Image 1 (cartoon, rainbow, N blue to C red):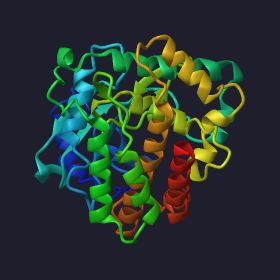
Image 2: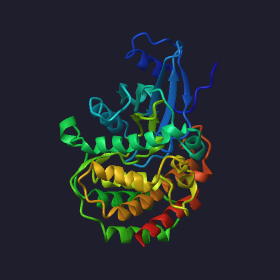
Image 3: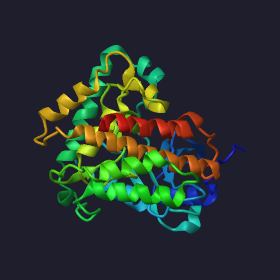
Image 4: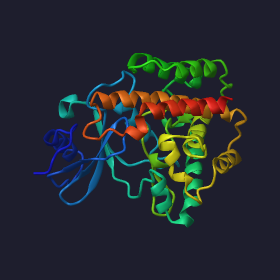
Length: 341
């Protein structure tokens, strides 16, 4: 009998999916997909080889405002008929008696995840600029969607996005970290005192980068994934996050130093900024502040994940020390400091 990974009750979950998928061929095989650092992701394969994807929260220590399955499902449902590619949805289960926590199931999108530098170098050279341009164009498409038009106008407050994010992540560090981090507090004060004026409001993905998209075999974005941090607010934060993850900083540590877009042919972060600016009327002169903010924010998120790993909340995944070590968190804070200088 195949091993069932932590976080899955196979019988009840199979019954729930079978009630929503005509012709589902039991039994189902569940395999945890490595790489998720927050919500847990599983590949579900039926006896006929048809694949689906299941998402659920971590199995243990969970911060109060995180890991909202209903929210993530709602966002992807709202974007189904827009120019933003998202996976087709099977359904949401909020009955915790089925799998001990809410979860949702979506269709499996064919393509590849370009996760690190080795993956980037494995991409056919001619497809690398195609991936870059598609990634930017998809972000522009997301930021063009009017939240009110797709039923997301009440997803969150639209104003003061950066101030709210600074408060949220500082609070989660204060409540969830197991150590003192003076530089994090210092940078929080500097960022809070110099927030640029927000230019309108749109849908902010919250963690937009190459390896959070399923890339089609033609090099274009087949589906944008990992919507758990999505909200409404200042969309320049998404652009800044993509710049941070592009890997241009020679002093970056951890995963940013191993970014797939460091491979020749993906271009530079300046290429990303220029293409985005061509299709946007927003003033991007304050982008360095946003990039510093994203470094600080990612440091907070990474510190939270480090604590969750230490408490065994990430299922059967092995601890990824390179991603969520204290050294990597400190490196992100130093990156923020460079962008503010």
